[in-house]
Image (tube, rainbow, N blue to C red; front, side, top):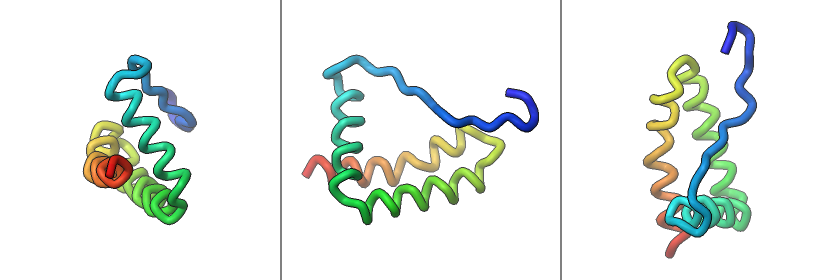
Amino acid sequence: MEDGDIRTHHIHIVNRNGTGWSNYISFRDYLNANPEKAMMYDEFKRKSAVRFADDRKRYTASKQEIIGQLLSEANM
């Protein structure tokens, strides 16, 4: 990316019907069914994006705990 470019998308590729696929679908469906959790996740991502604006790896790592928590709730 060049200076001034803005990343607008991040694509994940997983095997259909594998564990990764199931997790993405469960996570999506849980957030769609629970708008308050979706807003909480959105707020966390926004703060992490500012905090780790120049470090994609740390941004991604920062989300792992909240994603794990929400995914656990989704699979209850």
